[in-house]
Image (cartoon, rainbow, N blue to C red; front, side):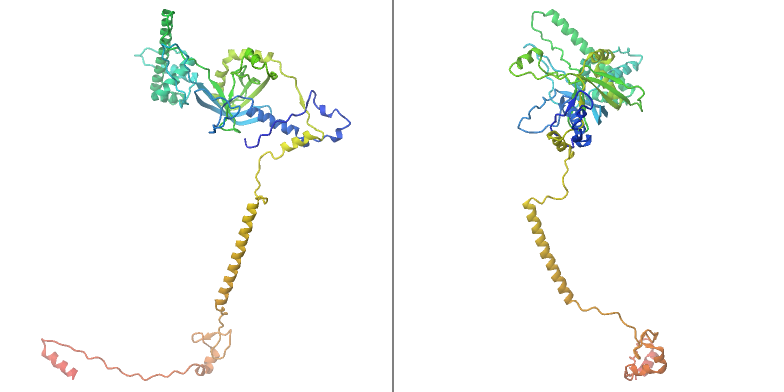
Length: 496
């Protein structure tokens, strides 16, 4: 749970509505309903009771600790578990969103036998096989028998018993083909041949079970005086329904069997989802509790605690899927069992009704309720606390280092400014002869037109002396030929 659980507070109750207002002399000192915080605390304690103590704990998140945890529930027996669906659960003013429903099937346990028999050990570890309800097995066997070919005799309808369900689950744990066929049949994606194969396998398991029971009965009749050497039939425990609340993940709670009635609410069907009402009585009886005689012996020294009067409560499942309804209907025991439970719940006399005192006088109870009703959620301050000496030292050290660093940076920036040359201003466009600005310039942007027309640029222009150009002689051209004497003679004339 996201909020911290406070210890329960004894709230003021009375036999009539508004009993706290009967004292007319001190009504001026009564606080309002919101200031008294009785209603808020009552709702919170009721919700915590439903989440933590109403249902027996089935399993939870294990903690690897050497110290034993007090009042820890015993581990559940070896079982297989399957999630059937999730929906919102309404109990009075409380709404438990996304509550998950599981179907738990227990593995068969071997009964003790004589020294001549060698019972087969069953695994005690958790099994990963998926349990399947009797409805799925029955539908698979029926479809397999209907789709049999004409050459094979049609299969007889097999009575689906809890023993057969456990036998199929045990066989599926060691036979991957059977496990795959069961998964396909449960998902509705199996072909006709696969359904036929699955029906034949279930039929063979049922025939083996009946043959084993018949042989065991025959051997028991023949050897009444001698020790029995046959393996007895393992005891099968009925499956259970387990809840998991969204507010407490990884914590699973057992819905005990008892006088329960499960009904679908008419007119609430939406896309195949129905509202389901579960009527039961609380507190639930402990299945492993001592009997009446043992209880009297165990409580002879200490005083026996008073038993709470059972009261009828109703749980409404909002938009529950069909898989959840099918599990609950089989878990209750069908319509015949529910008729007996209805009669018992009608004859059950609940406790007398009491009413809360919503307004309180100033006192210790008011202060206690206000203290536990504030700060519903544990909030952590964003601003760090300043009471710790270690954190203050760290902060002062950081500040000193920061100040030194700032001083060094300021000194370095001053030195850089001194070493840098001064920046020049913007270049002015002037006539080099008269010095006027903002006038159009010619001759490469150096002189203005009036200066050019007046001839003042000649005096302003620097005098340059030109050196006389000296003609450089051209290099002689030599032409040599071994085949023409005329060319050779002309060449001699040129060189001379």
